[in-house]
Image 1 (cartoon, each protein chain N blue to C red):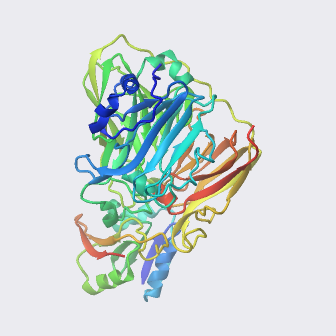
Image 2 (image 1 turned 90 degrees about the horizontal axis):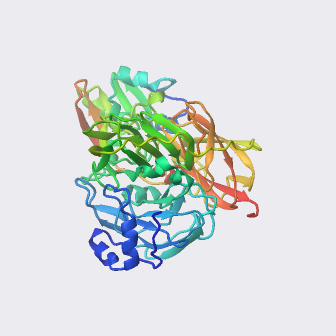
Length: 123
Length: 486
């Protein structure tokens, strides 16, 4: 079960929720007023932030992460707080666009502040 | 006055070829005129004479010279920023634009009140690679004095070209410049612009892509890192600031000094407004006086950390938080009899009551209608930009209130072409004084009401987000101004 937090006005978060459901995840969609408080509670580094935040099996998830990366996270169970796709790259799940695609890298982060590439996507 | 003759067309090809240009006597006088108010690493100043300004403007890529900066910079006449143009109301301006880029381009005369049609401020013109066109217009005889901004406005590639380096400035001289205290100040035009680092755009790897708007880590002033500005103890500086960045918003402060705002985007305000900090979004200009009231030393013009959309709890959304950066250094040299600040500037009239109110809601969503079909894009009132659709139709001579709503999770600076407006209401703090604006920053969740009178020029033009990546991704609407010119 993925619990996803987003603000009401976000125009792309729902697209990511659909992507997750289409890839077999059960998703609880929670609309909040203060997403910043959720990010702080889950320990998302500010420079990795995106428009929505989620939790799965004790891991924090930030942004439009592909479901395949989340499945890999759950298989490997690395000692990290979570993984994040900062910003809102065009072409990432929920951000598909006729305007084009951008390459992107999903990052992992630890409580100690280490940020490492988790998976690179040419999109 | 500073106007000197150079009626012939000529062409600056960067520092290396200024000697060639200097061979023309008329041009020598122009260059001498430009020495008034030393400009840190400033671009050549081209001033009108006998009511005319005519020049070639070549857009082309050149090898970058910013230390640590990109290998290639897009230039006008070999420079980024390109030339500083200086005109008077009533002058005829002819600019022969040559496109030596590998993609189409055009010109927008940001903030100028000139026709949005024909060969004037027509953003629907398209100059193909290798092509050229002539912009030809007259500055209205009642045009306000101010600093205006030339940049490409080719939908789909405007952000690439502005982020790449294309920018120019245009000063309209007038009543503000003749106020004795203002005239006594030494004037510097400061073009603020960020560039990508030479190691490539870290943006894409870290998610700082087009949806947020590309920013670069190198913060330049007039194309230079940390230039020096000289001030005498007792002296007065007039800093004319332009944010020519693609997406970066500057929270500016000048160490040890209060800035006295004397003009906003469209011209002077009624009296100097003291500011400890100045927020400048892409496309915005601010004209400030700085008194040399310290005994000596060096002080930095700083870009303080700005948190886009911070109050929505979004944090920096993919941007490093960082600390303040030094943009330029103010260095004391010598002393003069203290120069005073002006007491009064130019009154800003109250606008007539609006005849109607419209609402414009900015956001991003899937499946917006527009020329790019389905998919993620930015929208105004649920529609992405389509050059073949008129979104808003107004009557020439009418006054309207436009409620601009940022319903998005990020900042949007809203810019209207052709006519300046006044901000009459806001969910955040209103400006302390009535002021002429053409660009207004709306933070996530903010709404503001602008009052605009559609004067003098009928035709088709646009309003859009001046985070130009957002504009290219659809955040633009078409405005049709119906009527006959008086």
